[in-house]
Image 1 (cartoon, rainbow, N blue to C red):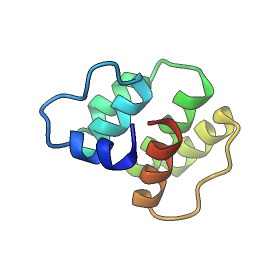
Image 2 (image 1 turned 45 degrees about the vertical axis):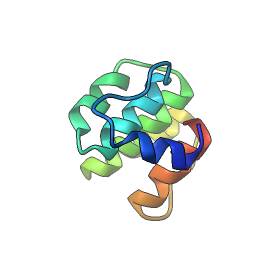
Image 3 (image 1 turned 90 degrees about the vertical axis):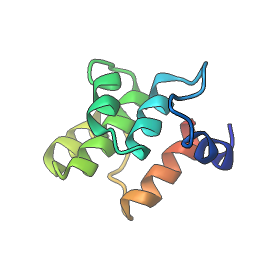
Length: 94
């Protein structure tokens, strides 16, 4: 799914079928549903989920926890705005 398609899907009530759980988390985050987004990936241990998890804790303002999850994802801490990171993650994993 392209970034534009992903953004267009935000007008729907639910995420498109077949969307990976990490993409669903980013989708719900964009809809302002942080808790739903976090609940989707909270128990997942894979690197992609950890990367999205780090971003979500950054959104929350919990930088200590975000850094923990960046480390678990083996990714550097993102330098840039939350919107830039969201776009980066959607383009990378969406």
